[in-house]
Length: 266
Image (cartoon, rainbow, N blue to C red):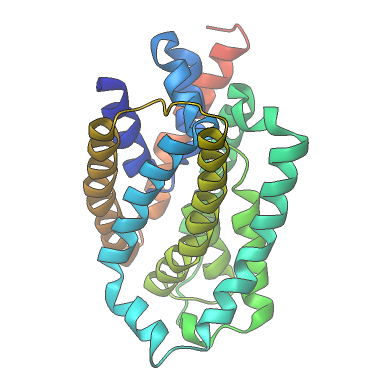
């Protein structure tokens, strides 16, 4: 059970803060042999993947419920933009998963990409203020931000940090870049969950038993949801104060230490 709690907490924190949940989970799995099998199951266990992502998806729905309601009523033109923005990540994600799946669990790559995330955050901190609204984006801008999200398929690249940077570069103000980033996460997480559901169906059809009990899954979902709400609220507050680049002070030392460790320098 403690493994589920650790995984859920890491997922809830790093899914939203611009420090890369996938990178931290890959590095954590490589460092802690006792946790490695459970950590890798985020990519290999459909059941655990659905539960933890469902928890963080619930966090997005709770924090952004007003904006989501607007999408279904007055801001419907944004819906196709979210679809367009999801396409690059879907193409890249499916390609990597089917052809280069070992990249997704490579701790050295994750460490190096954490350094890249730190660089992106530094660039984010140096941008001048913007005043654009996400409701004014066109399909080209949505596709470009989608490409930033596709880049975050690599472990160690923060999805939130990458897409927020993409939005800011295209003229969105801080809060709107955060909002579009996490609205864009909804179809991405739903898509990943659907793929995981397919894996569960295949397991059930083959007569295989699920790896975790209902209680473990419920606890995992609850922890990732609660931690996710706190992390996402924190992220919005720091974005308003233009402090997201401060997370580079975590990504740089963490990535450098992990890179040295996995290459035998420590």
